[in-house]
Image 1: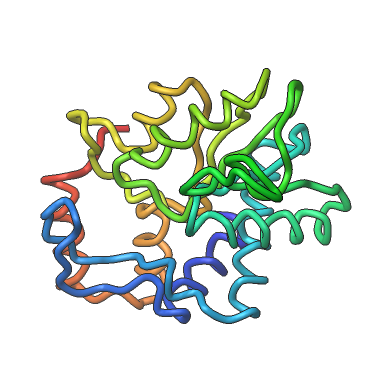
Image 2: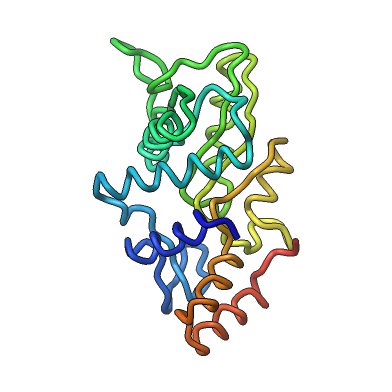
Length: 221
């Protein structure tokens, strides 16, 4: 496992973004862990988060893209922070943009914030976590409606690796097959569990609870 992945796992836990316990998800599933990216609330946290995204994006997709697109609302600070970090780490200027929830008809009019996408642009989508793929259903058409735009891929922070709306397929697998571009994550839940076990930070009871959860809801790889 790359060093930045282990650093990111510690960062999520220290930031109280990734928690273990007994949680009820929006889907109604009872989960032994929960991720809440809204818990990142300081400038230092956002700076570090942008760096983790930039490293994962660079590893997965290289430098052949122009813009990071973060779906409103949570994706806006992610795209902005990652574009800054990308320049700091790799000396390449990357634009960012996002959709508005409601199209603006005056001043800086239109559906997009930040860069106005145009023919030839190559875009990486960026999100916190994808559990159903619903946000991609809403935003991919917006991006592609701006012109002859290529979506290079999607990067999320954590791949929960559980089935989405289709049997045996994760939400990220569904997004890739539905929209025709690759998907990736800074870390997977498999990597999180392996890292915490290695460091003695996951007790036997929680390890069993996670194993039971994936026995029921885990996506086939």
